[in-house]
Length: 552
Ligand SMILES: *[C@@H]1O[C@H](CO)[C@@H](O)[C@H](O)[C@H]1NC(C)=O
Ligand SMILES: *[C@@H]1O[C@H](CO)[C@@H](O)[C@H](O)[C@H]1NC(C)=O
Ligand SMILES: *[C@@H]1O[C@H](CO)[C@@H](O)[C@H](O)[C@H]1NC(C)=O
Ligand SMILES: *[C@@H]1O[C@H](CO)[C@@H](O)[C@H](O)[C@H]1NC(C)=O
Ligand SMILES: *[C@@H]1O[C@H](CO)[C@@H](O)[C@H](O)[C@H]1NC(C)=O
Ligand SMILES: *[C@@H]1O[C@H](CO)[C@@H](O)[C@H](O)[C@H]1NC(C)=O
Ligand SMILES: *[C@@H]1O[C@H](CO)[C@@H](O)[C@H](O)[C@H]1NC(C)=O
Image 1: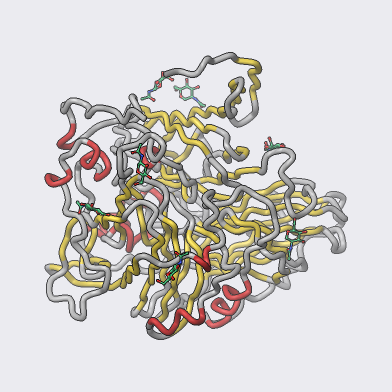
Image 2 (image 1 turned 180 degrees about the vertical axis):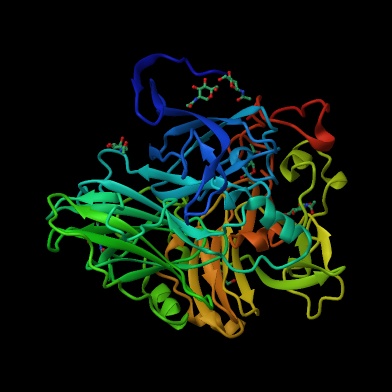
């Protein structure tokens, strides 16, 4: 059922090309070559992963409802897959780019992702999910602009900049994988990079970005790191927070922001200082040893280099918790709403199920594993979604093998795929319980959730009294501080197989993730798209006849 493709326009943009399909939403097309290449963010060369020769990879610049096609050629010698962190893929978990829904792209092969940024705005990122590739690169920014005529709650900025920052290990990703495979702890990172670089401060640094005095700029700041929270700040300037993970926020000014792994924040910075160079600074948080990376922000016609008076990061995580509490959704800003059914009045919806997920670190046969409610996720060779669609789920995984409550005591950690069976349109409360002393960061794909509370201590039903049921930010990733919990509310209205994962990548790699399966009750195309024709198949479904498609 190909749409009548009348090409009314064919534009070539620097990053990709845009096809305007008459009567439909425009499609933007990218061709990406994924290769190895040497990178040296901290000055020490390591085997990195490049996209079209770039590290970080190209930015995707899109507009709400654009169809995005990315033809990814895998020139690595290992299977490779990218995920689009925070893109909701409505009805379309087929293209989420995680190993529970897709087969990885084999070496020497290509696959074309095809997804729509339906009803979304905001700052996102993409990154690899295969082995520890994320520690080598292959990541970049993805922005979704508001459509023309949709009011944005601030004046159009003079320019739009993306900061992809993260911790970095000089060991290289294969060594990191070997460490984890042998059951050891990853240890600490060697430093931090900002857009794959660190300013040396020797007067020869190239600026990351340029501002003109008097103008205001949009910065999209994402933490693409492996395990470390970052504090980000601009020397001499404040940041006006305007959006996070798809929601316009109440516009508070901040001297610095804690950005936890997997999170993205959009801020406005006004060039209202003496024209010279300034540093944008990212420092590690909650680590025994603090690392800081800097990048130059240059004023056009500036007259001096940066001052070496670098603003200090805050101390302790109570500061970070207080900052979380200042984040509010701007209820009056018009924007694409994350939950089209009107569930943004979420305080009045009855909770139909409560799921408590507790993270633990375990030793299994002498090897480190990370677990959720006593089980540690193991990737099956057949993607869960394909197994379910081909009606052979029982050959690959069991539904609801973990309970909605963490066990009082874990006797034996189950190593298995973890899939929760969630009823379509259930309104679910999820409590992330962290009884460990390390900070956690939890992400959900396919949906945004309302992050209604993050508190210290133990959760109990009375804590619901303290939930923000009015203007909690609807987002996709929430941090959980040591010996604390976070509560989120989510309308599971997007049929598919969706990943809930630790964004702390060693934990993710060693089992701290799971999936929720949300079936279309009557196999309806209104709820979920059919398996796309060109989707790769692998595992037990390879060679099996395709199941009959959904018809209506
Ligand atoms: C990708 O690599 C192919 C083969 O080397 C080349 O023809 C093509 O131009 C490359 N594409 C991009 C976008 O760099
Ligand atoms: C991104 O897209 C918007 C909307 O189409 C456009 O105005 C802007 O110039 C683009 N930015 C870049 C850097 O290509
Ligand atoms: C692989 O790339 C070729 C050339 O661009 C394209 O025609 C084909 O559709 C791609 N294959 C997949 C599975 O995306
Ligand atoms: C929220 O958005 C509205 C509408 O665009 C805007 O006028 C208002 O200033 C914003 N409120 C806050 C507190 O940021
Ligand atoms: C929520 O549940 C209460 C008590 O069970 C019931 O009275 C109320 O009608 C429900 N509200 C909605 C919106 O379903
Ligand atoms: C999943 O839950 C639905 C009810 O929401 C139930 O009908 C179905 O049998 C369950 N499936 C499995 C495999 O447990
Ligand atoms: C599909 O299921 C939904 C919810 O169970 C129901 O409201 C709807 O009427 C069903 N549609 C058809 C065509 O059976």
